[in-house]
Image 1 (cartoon, rainbow, N blue to C red):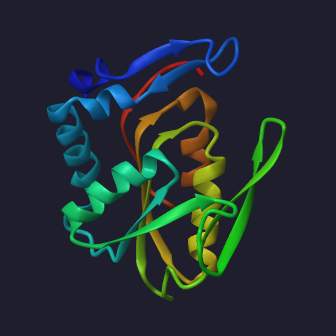
Image 2: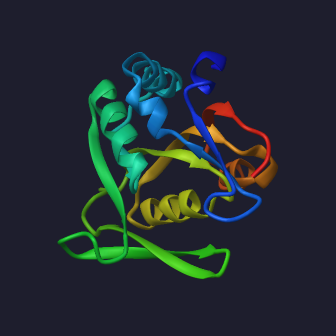
Length: 176
């Protein structure tokens, strides 16, 4: 874990003063770091029957595609409102100043399918919570949520675990 942590770039005061942005693109750019990241994210689920990985836009697409390939299952994109070309269902979630919406195709998940939710970082948990609610509304069973980074002080992981969804992150950073 500590070997990978040094590959994450920290950018102070982005996107606003007081925020320490954790940039995983530097981790993705390192071939061995990216390979190790995917391996560590997959490890808790290697022997779980999983029908699909649901990746949250946009870095969750990069991670989710690789994880789905390793697990031998399908991939479901979870996108911002208006980006998917077919009939969709949406779920609102809270932002600091208002709300936003994510969507999936209405036929992306079949009832009873076992889905793993993937994204790069869990902070407040709002986007991951919305993704879980979308999948649940379609009849899917969210068997877990996996992230590269957890920001434990913000409490998103606890929010996801309160939904009875096991949560795994391969590293944590203090602060916001």
